[in-house]
Amino acid sequence: MENFNEHALEMSIMELFKDEGYTYVSGDQIHRERTEVLLTDDLKQYLYNRYAKDGITPSEVDSVILMLRNISGTIYEANKAVFKLLCDGFILNREDRTQKDLYIELIDFDTPENNIFKAVNQFEIEGVNNQLRIPDGIVFVNGIPVVVLEFKSAVKENTTIMDAYKQLTIRYRRDIPEIFKYNAFVVISDGANNKYGSFFSPYDFFYAWRKINSDDKELDGINSLVT
Image 1 (cartoon, rainbow, N blue to C red):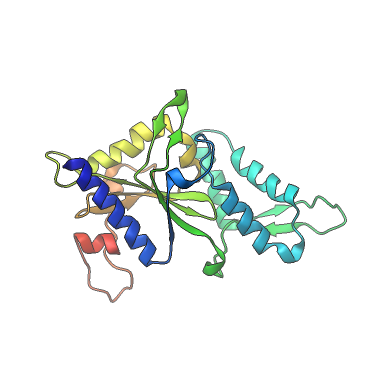
Image 2 (cartoon, one colour; image 1 turned 120 degrees about the vertical axis):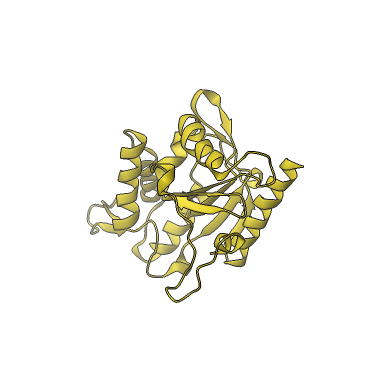
């Protein structure tokens, strides 16, 4: 019963993403190495489309992906470095030195429809010591896993979204740290209670997002999930 409930919650949340125009994909349909947490095809497609007029080359696109992959340091330092790139963009030196440098933005904030938005579940990740983990939901923008969602069924005795928080920040942090290099925030939900926060924050700093516009009514429960 409980697995059914968690699966049903997972699928209904994927439906909400589809309603917002995200492409939903089941992770087992994505052709990739299980250690790979970027959807490199999406990132390549975005870069080729966005910088077609600049004649971006395959090796320049590969160098952007390599740079993202190779960011190292503690998980916090790597996350901070990735986020600077995501927010501010960066300068790419051209393969052909006679061309002027290219300013690369990994997300097109000015024209949202230029980005590739995907909501994915059943995405199996092979991490430290060959541990396999399957986050309940991942949001990818241009192939970059910016949000990880973890669900706990409210029907289950004695489980709370605190358990979802622990799953993310203890087990996943230990077993699949690579995906959190790229993380903007995480979401924990049991359908009725929904909170989001920074992967690095204590649980007390997780909050429900109750309204979208300032004059909206504050909504709780299942409505906060929709928000």
